[in-house]
Image (cartoon, rainbow, N blue to C red):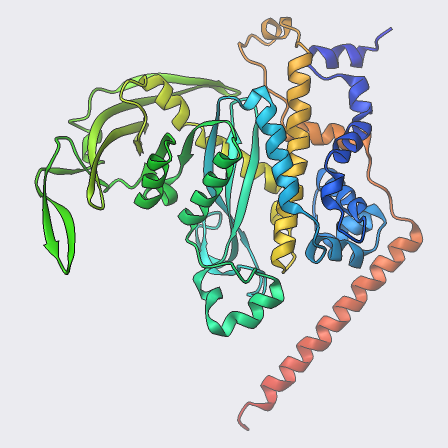
Length: 477
C-alpha cells in the first residue's frame, strides 16, 4: 500500500521509488560516457564520476580539492585528471549533443548565444584579463566563456562553449604563459562574435535541431555574424542598439571605384534610428501573450515592419521587430520569412530568457563560477563535465514529465492553470537525498585543519617577505 508521501509525490509527478534509485540511475547514465574519460594508457574515468557527483551534490567550493576530499580520492590525482590528462572532453560534449539531438523535446529548440564572465584574482588563469564583466557591470579581471544553449520552454541545456582568449594573450611576451597554461599553438585571436559563429557552425554541422538563433546586443549588432547566419540559411533574432540605422524605403545605391576596388554606397534615401520607429512609421502595436510562465503569463507589446539594411556593399531587406515592456524597448533585426506570423517571431525572440536561466543554473546549481584552475585544458574539461551534469538533470526531468502524469485536480486545488515544472534545484535536492554526502572522520577533519593552518602560515611568510622588500626599498627617514 502506497504511503501518504508516495501518493502525494506522484500527484506532483515525482516517482518516490525512482528518487530512491537516483544513484543507480546516475551510475547507469555515467557508464554511457565513461569511455570518453579513458586515455590510451590509463582508465581514470572514476575521477570523472566523482567530479560530476560533486558538482551535483555539493553546495559550495566545488573546486578540485574540495570535490576530491568529498569523494575520498587524492587531490593531486583529481587535479591531474582535470588539468593535465588528455581524455576526450570534446567527445563528451559531442555525445551529449547526439543524445540531445535524438530527444523529441528539442525538436523545435532555439539556439541562444551568450557569454558568462567569472571574476579572477590574477592574470595567470587561461584567457583571464581586464575585460568587461556583465555580472559585475564593469571592467574587472575576468575569464569569459562564450556559450550556445539549446532551449525550449520545457528544457534547456548548454550545447557547447569556447573560452574567449583576449588579443593581449597572443603577443610575443605572452608566449611562455600561453604554453604554460596550455593554449593550443594553432589557436588564434578570435572576437566573441567569431567564437559564437564557430559554435553555430559546429552545431549545424552535427545536425543539432534548432529552428532559429537568438542573441543579445553584443552579438546581434555584429553585421558579419548576421551575414554569416544569413548565408548559412539560419533564421536569427538579433538584438541591436537603439541607434542602429535602417531604411523604410529601398535607398538608391551607386557603385564607385576607388584604390583599384569597386564599392557600393547609398546616395539617396532616408535613414532612421530604430528607436525612432518605436513611435511612428513601423506598424501598430499588438499586445501578445507569448507563453505561460510559472508566475503568470508573459505579456508584452510588439510591432514590426520590413526595413532595408546595408551590409558592407549589399543591401538586404529584413524584419525590424520591436518589443515594449512599459517604457523599455528592445530592437531586433531578423531574417525571418516575410510571411512568418508576428506571434511566432515574438515567441522565438523571447527564448533568450532561457539561456539566462541556463547560465544561472550552471553557476548556482553546478558551481561553474567556483572553478579555480589555471590551465586551458582544465577549463575545457570543466565545461564538458558541467554540460554532462546539466544533461543528467534535464534528461531525468524530461523522462519523468513524459511518463508520469500529474494529478489534474491540483489545478483546481490551487486555482491555477499551470503547475511549476521541476527545477534543476528540485532534482538536485532529490539526488542529494539519494546520494548523501560523506562525513569527515575525526582524523580527516584534523588533517584538513592542519593543511589549512599550514597554508595560512605559508601565506603569512610570503606576505612578510614582500613587506620586508618594500620596506628595504624605502628612503631613510
